[in-house]
Amino acid sequence: MARAKIALIGAGQIGGTLAHLVGLKELGDVVLFDISEGVPQGKALDLAESSPVDGFDAALSGANDYAQIEGADVCIVTAGVPRKPGMSRDDLLGINLKVMKSVGEGIKQYAPNAFVICITNPLDAMVWALREFSGLPKEKVVGMAGVLDSARFRYFLAEEFNVSVKDVSAFVLGGHGDTMVPLVRYSTVGGIPLPDLVSMGWTSQEKLDAIVQRTRDGGAEIVGLLKTGSAFYAPAASAVQMAEAYLKDQKRLLPCAAWVDGPYGLKGMYVGVPTVIGAGGIERIVDIKLNKDEQAMLDKSVAAVQGLVEACKGIDSTLA
Ligand code: APR
Image (cartoon, rainbow, N blue to C red; front, side):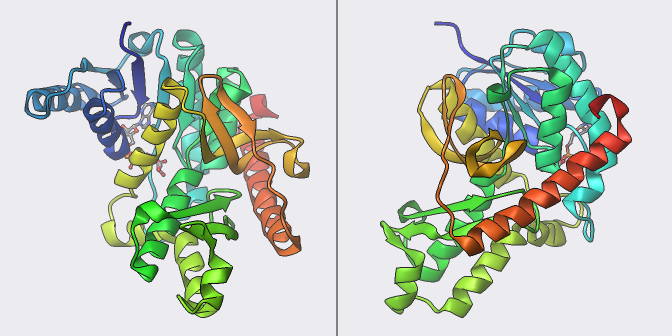
């Protein structure tokens, strides 16, 4: 069978890391696309030259022309600008909305059958805009946020409990911003829910609350340290997990920014929810029963996302 074709739109920090991971995992051939001339070509060649050392077979190329992504099975979008210290993800809205327009049109023309994963921030509004501009089916356009936010939560919990990250599972719902909702009740260590671990004396409620807050601020913590850009290793790993679930029809249960119409009482919007990803794209939205406090936190997050979508409509009248 022919190898899958994976188009990476944006060949910056995340794009380059994505290409490396896709190569190492032999998920398919890679086209790195960017408006910057030479950068996608240079990164593709550098990575291709690492393939004999690591022993992976993948064709890697760089492009400045959308025609090169023709027939892609998966597109992962990181085109746009990242945050600088002191900026919120929402501050990127105006610039990155324009970028989504050109990317959406390129995908519409050359890769209309692709599974599209958006990473560009502010995530929930950008994945919505990308879906609008591309016109692809809603179950084929999804945003990467939940896997990353949950991974941060899982890492902090594994550190606190001094256990393997493999034994910690966690869920983060809602928008990819300050209002995200780490679901403590549904997060477990070896199947034991976090509230039980507090009762068992493994940690205190105060420490758990601090970990929840650190998760919410996880992106800003990295931006503050790097100063010149935002996180890229963990975001790339998270998106590759989603791409792999699609390409291998794994039916993975992963939290993503997906189109939700009905579940959680929502009437058609993109927001972070647990989903099942398989060959059909987003095959199912998992409608977890929330308690009053959790629902209130989700409502707040939903309102924040809706505010950003309205702002997009204000900037680009074709979206209204
Ligand atoms: N079309 C294609 N590529 C573009 C466009 C465009 N219209 N505009 C900018 N780019 C490219 C830039 O040339 C750059 O190479 O997007 C790339 C972005 O790379 P970085 O600046 O290194 O940013 P990165 O860290 O990869 O983050 C990208 O993901 O997590 C989000 O907030 C982050 O929105 C940001 C995005």
